[in-house]
Length: 211
Image 1 (cartoon, rainbow, N blue to C red):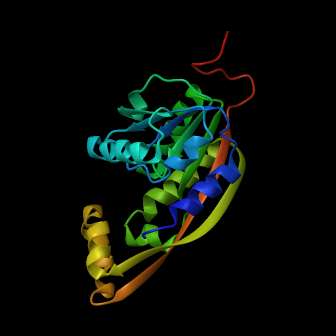
Image 2 (image 1 turned 180 degrees about the horizontal axis):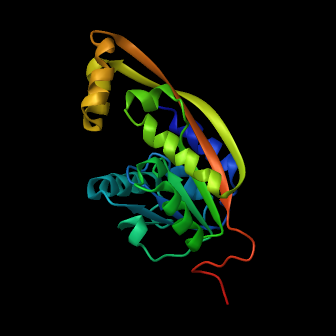
């Protein structure tokens, strides 16, 4: 198992109360964390990857959560939606301008939850995403962050081939960084991740607010 998704869901639910709320889930494709949706009222699940959304639909069907989620193939920065909370599901670091993405999210919802890799995580280095992760967390300094929480996990792989299959889409740098694992089995790579709750500034209005 690459990571403990059940633990991630528990950490997410402990961090934020989704009870009965409408959620815009950015980067929901793949569906590893769908179980949090049992607590939510409705989830608008956004992803710009058609194959990832297909995997999400499969997981929703298996979990019996098809009536709770609405998968949407779209670019978040072009979406016109409103909700109670926007959740960036390991996706803020993939945004070309993380600060602009958070600003747009705050126009859609009063709360924004960022769930992403933590700066300095060994796994984000292996995946050649360390610079993007650093930039995404640095961008939060310009907003009203109510709380943050850091967690530790481990990415586990049977052998080098399984690790290579996981990172091969990350580019040449990532493939070079795993060279030292060649020939090894039972590979364990520490992974730090964190959560942040961002609130809309007092007096500011969003798309779903009444005038």
